[in-house]
Image 1 (cartoon, rainbow, N blue to C red):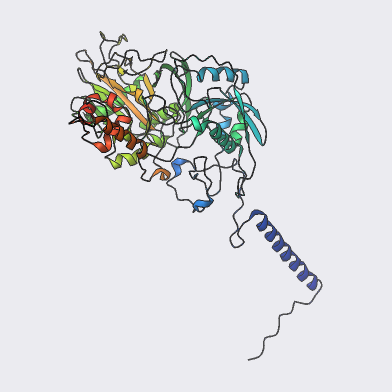
Image 2: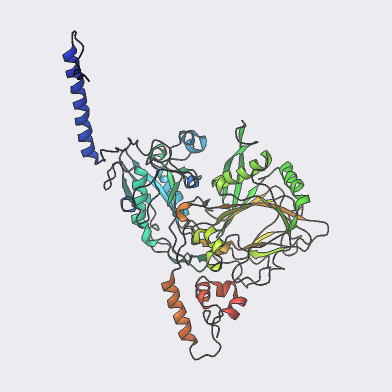
Length: 592
């Protein structure tokens, strides 16, 4: 075999020069790569893709948690919040930015006056009831790399009793947030929105999620906390630096430490006019109009609002026609301590198929547009009918994890306390009385809230444990086309036991009460909260030991369910479910 001749460049002008040029370019590229690798501390074998500023492109929402994502960094390298909980990060490290939202009239028409914002902040932060987890902020200054917000004097203070007069004249305090810095080894700069949330947590966290009153229920389980979230005063999420800058100085920001927007009641009798986009037909069909709905605040705890003219006559008729042939006896979700339920709910019901038609989808979206909660968080519309004498005793729409210690499936469903029904929109499809008369001597059919608080922050009449006493507290008469919106949580994501409510019996012959409701959760099911979480056993053990010590020397003074009685007693069940607890948990309730 002949030896191969070495490769020789083609003869001609510029041959040597071309090779020198190519070699120089290759050497230059190599040097650039080496220095950039050293500067950014990137592995040379697999350099990271270039990252854009986090405020320029959309990020993955919680509702997208089921979508496949690229593998995440090791636990030790992951960014964590002030609680030490790893933060969910998009592979591209991006946060949402929505130009169409910022161009909408609902956004551009927001007031931007610092004196007016401070005035509204004072009213919102001094309501006569506990509403933990809500903070009204005012944007003071805004620059490219920093901003400041004004916090009310009650933000960051220990919870005080609402009946204690607030005589502190101190003005709002300023909180500065920084952006565009390099936290730790992360090559991506921290955005201004991230810096603001971090500063708010540093200032407020020590006084959040603390015991407030026995009508705000805290889960007995240690679950990952929900993310804090900022919104405009009409419920638009504030997610990016562009959102903050387009709001600018003088604009209001609402912080919810439970992560979801709740319409503030402001005061009893306050009217809020809400523009709701109304979609006609299914996705992709053109045509978008707005319906102005007037909401009147009936209660601050629970937050209850009556909506005038939420449905048209035709929509009421459509829902009734859909349901008439499908009605079945109403059911109940049974708690660990539930007794005989046969007389709790005597109405009939059916459910509409989720997004089952263009008309159903439009009704569902109207409820979500009203509450500003994502469509994925909603359940099927329920339709109910109450004939003469039928009723639904006082109950709660949420599923308190402290009532389901023996039901693992339910605990997983509510993520051990992180997830639950947040809002209920109940629509009245038929008036029980055309005159609008209501009350003990009226035709009945009202929706009642026996533990609602009045304008002074007190119960209208002290609770007597009667789950059928319709007129002890607040009651809302059924008027065709109207709706009532109420919340089962307070802004920090804990459950509001004052959301106890029921349906009164219609009392007239040949008159029925027809209604429909949409339950909306605070969050969808999330992979980040899919584990099994332990109970807060230390405090429970102390309570159990104290109960056993108190019961010493008293024959028969024992709990039938020692494992759960202490937790039930701690969550207030001795008062809320007195008959059962006095028999089954007499030691924990001190009934010996």
